[in-house]
Structures are given as C-alpha cells and as structure tokens.
Image (cartoon, rainbow, N blue to C red):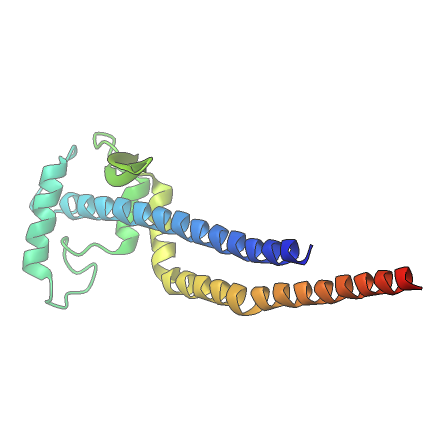
Length: 188
C-alpha cells in the first residue's frame, strides 16, 4: 500500500511536468507560426510601401523575398529606425496590412515542418490578422512566458514533489501505526 502511494505521488509529479511541457510546446508552436506570418506581412509591407518602387498587388512570394533580401543588404546594421524608409516598416504599419490587405493580394501562407507520427512533412498555414497581433504580444511577453515556465517547473520540482513526499510519509506512518495497533490487538 505504501509503495502504491509513493508511485502515485511520483506519477502525479510526472503528469504535471508532462502537461507543462506539452503546454510550453504548444505555446512555442503558436509563437513560431505567428512570427512566421508576421514576417510574411512585413515583407509585403516593404513591397507595397514602395521599397522597390511603385508595385501594385498582387505581389508574388518571390518578389517579396527579393525585396526583403535587398532591404536587408542595404539597411541591416545601419541603425535606421522603423518607419524612416519603406524597407523599415513599423509594427503598426505591418499590422495595418494584416487587417487591410489589398483585395487583389492573396492572404500570405507560411510553411512549417510538422510531424505526422514523426515522419516529418511540410505543413502550409494560412496567415490571419490574429496571428500578426499575437506575434506582437508574444514578442513583448516572450521573456515573461519563458521565465514563468521555468518558475512553474521549479515549483513542481521544489514544492509539489516534497509536498507529495511529505504526504506519502504521513500516510506511511499512519498505515504503520494502524498495522501495529492491529498486531497488538491480535496479541491480546
């Protein structure tokens, strides 16, 4: 009976840790998807704001990538602030394009590596305006989420586990007392 209690206590800590890891993985997957979609809209904002001259929708993925690489070659490391050039759109401008995409422009899609029972495959994800705003929120709160996850895991290891072990110890002592009382009663 004591062995079952200890096993249950250990199992509950493992289950809680597994749930925490699964939630962290799901959150990280959503953060990755939203970051990829935000970068697609960022590249569209560069093109549609005139980084390569007057370009109208629909803009192909190839053109968007070419403009993004040219902007990166020209402006990376220069210290130019966002909003000072079409190659450097602000987050608000990108968010505007997320919500007000030209009608001729198809909604961007992004690709992520997925696992179909560990046989990796490429999954196509439709980018939505919600993913853009999620990306901004997650970017601001990324450290808080990760630090919070570390705190939850540490709390499980250093608080929940000792509490479970203490409860098992108390129950073990109670069971031992009950057995000894029954044994003494049987001797009398």
